[in-house]
Length: 76
Image (cartoon, rainbow, N blue to C red; front, top):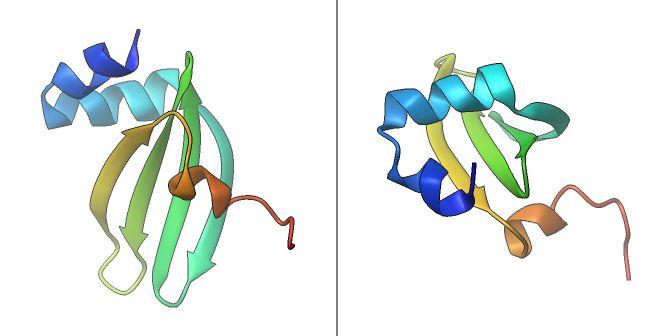
């Protein structure tokens, strides 16, 4: 599946693909928000959870950039 194919899926199918086909990579907690990073084929998916309400806020798909950088522990 390509990033374009994934983005063209309805949201419920994006969630299904993320949780059933993608590989969990890492998570970060910032305040009451938990970010989970998944890899699917040649792109990444970030799922943002609200720990206070126990709900998913957003799902974002991407290949590189700032969203991926937050999972690196490398400081300059």
